[in-house]
Image 1 (cartoon, rainbow, N blue to C red):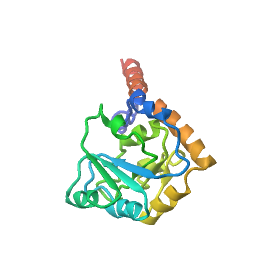
Image 2: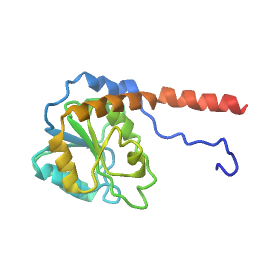
Image 3: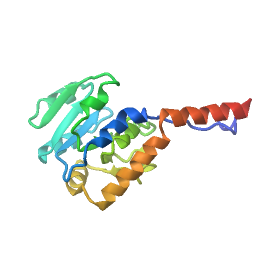
Image 4: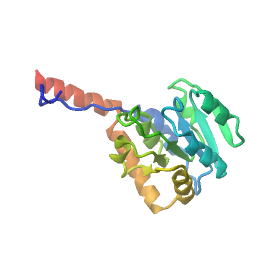
Length: 196
């Protein structure tokens, strides 16, 4: 688009900041007991081996959202709390008590170009986020922990909570606030007024 319109810019996902920031009132865990993935979990997009490694290491795994066949098998494992699909308005309630979020995306042609909106939702809660190194996550590496292999998720979750984590979480909260829908719409409105 920039070839035709040099003033074109990317307006990515955003977050209903206040809705997810309400979870910041929960005190941070001294160690991680419950990790959570929310959203549609399909074999093409999600690394189920990473989720299985998390459960196998003794963490409780909360899954919120739709599951394909492989995910339904995972949901029956001991240590997995499968909530199922909930409305976006009910999502913060389904995330109460979570100590950290995991975004174990497979890196492939389908996922390389995605920038999950849930990333900002996770950051807004004030909980650590461990994610696959998608290009969009690499851009947020200051705020999220990157895990390339299933064992990396386990190692990182076991190593939380330290001073670096607190700094990442504080930075992530501010990053989420800067990427609220209010901020996103203000930027779009400004761009439209400039183009008129």
